[in-house]
Image (tube, rainbow, N blue to C red; front, side, top):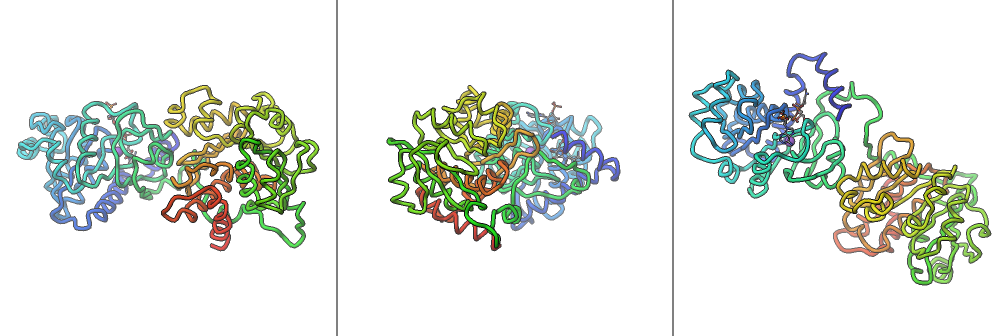
Amino acid sequence: METVRTAERELMARLPDGALMQRAAAGLAAACADLLGRVYGSRVVLLVGSGDNGGDALYAGARLARRGAGVTAVLLAPERAHAGGLGALRRAAGRVVGAGGDAGAAASAGATGTAASVASVASVASSASAEELIARADLVVDGIVGIGGKGGLRPDAEALAAAAGRARAAVVAVDLPSGVDADTGEVRGAAVRADLTVTFGTHKPGLLIDPAREYAGSVRLVDIGLGEVLPDGAELEALQHADVARLLPVPTGESDKYRRGVVGIAAGSDRYPGAAVLAVSGALRGGAGAVRYVGPAGDAVIARFPETLVSDRGPHKAGRVQAWVVGPGAGEDAGTVAEVVAADVPVLIDADGLRLADADAVRARTAPTLMTPHAGEAAALLGVAREEVEHGRLAAARELAARYDATVLLKGSTTLVADPAGGAVRVNPTGTAWLATAGSGDVLSGLAGSLLAAGLSALDAGSVGAYLHGLAGRFAADGAPVGAHDVADAIRRAWRDVYLD
Ligand SMILES: NC(=O)C1=CN([C@@H]2O[C@H](COP(=O)(O)OP(=O)(O)OC[C@H]3O[C@@H](n4cnc5c(N)ncnc54)[C@H](OP(=O)(O)O)[C@@H]3O)[C@@H](O)[C@H]2O)[C@@H](O)CC1
Ligand SMILES: [K+]
């Protein structure tokens, strides 16, 4: 989060002391009030760590207390809690206890001369333990740790996170759920599970990428004015409808089918003819002017899609294409994979192709390469355990892109697209769990390959393909299970939704 911190420092130098924190706390309190519905008479518990994240929680708690909520702050480190925030909460008649419900520890917050007075702290550090307070709360605000967090939660923080998890209260995370890694989205140990995360200034990668994304609940961004000073080139970006609409290849008056690009699909085997059919089904909806199929499943492909140009003579002799897709259902056909990898046009490598392709040959390519592994395939390529990739998706995508000098689309519940040149990694915002269905990846490879053939860069083809594919998955599912061919059928609707929006 170095970029955010630098921006904060710059902005702070121009603003009166505490102005950023006040903006953050105001936005946080408003979000809490929305969630509570009725603030007056509600029971709010603040989990307060020793940094500014806890300060945000304390100031927001003070605002809620002024509106009639019963607010109790549970301090993890009473002697180091944010002094200004503690004073504000006290002035608003909020209560303060130590994490163990321990009056002595809480009282020391006052005793060390911070804004809380000994009398007020000691008098309210009553008999109820933090655990009991949390169990009775309507709302729990997680201000344990924010972007300053290092490593997994410490044991006392972990106990509070667990208590919040057991409670019936809604949980609001301040800036990000404590315990998730702000930079990478990794969750190594215990972490707070939030219903809502109120984040400040900019989306942190950890809020957009699984597994952390799951812990964040819905995410609300509060503008604290960082936009003016944040440098360009954020670490992550997500395409929106308007971006995708601009990138879609749309035929002009002069287009003929060859100018719109021909995509070659080298996929399927006697054992897996279905993969060929599904890849072609995606390719036909991706904007290329024609789809050429090469491989042993030509009959199955023609039977389903008679518009396909079919050849059984191998990629070299199949006729010109503007991009290749190789790998879905390829089985052990390393020869075809090698032939395609050697072609001097953009190539998308998927599924079996990822395993069969020679790494040096991929690196030696001069035309763009787009690799589309899921977590298991990425793990095999990197030589690590699958969990390693699942816990660190951003790092894995970047690492693969660097190793293969290829654009990498890492599939999963949050699909990421990383370019070898560096720059922001694209997070696909349209995914749905329904897409985890057999053959769905084959459809995506055909679709993205078709976009490559139509002239999009590997980064754009991958991210636009994932976007349309995710949207198509949502349309096709509509709350019920889907097959991959349903997803392919819905691509046209997704395209219209984006283009005509
Ligand atoms: N700058 C601004 O103007 C604005 C900043 N804003 C807010 O500030 C937040 C960043 O604040 P920050 O830099 O004080 O760090 P923060 O996240 O509170 O954590 C540091 C503390 O946590 C502790 N700690 C560390 N790891 C831990 C663990 N695993 N488990 C448990 N504890 C752990 C660590 O303890 P220590 O290592 O020192 O013992 C240290 O005391 C940011 O996320 C946003 O909410 C907004 O108000 C907008 C304006
Ligand atoms: K937090």
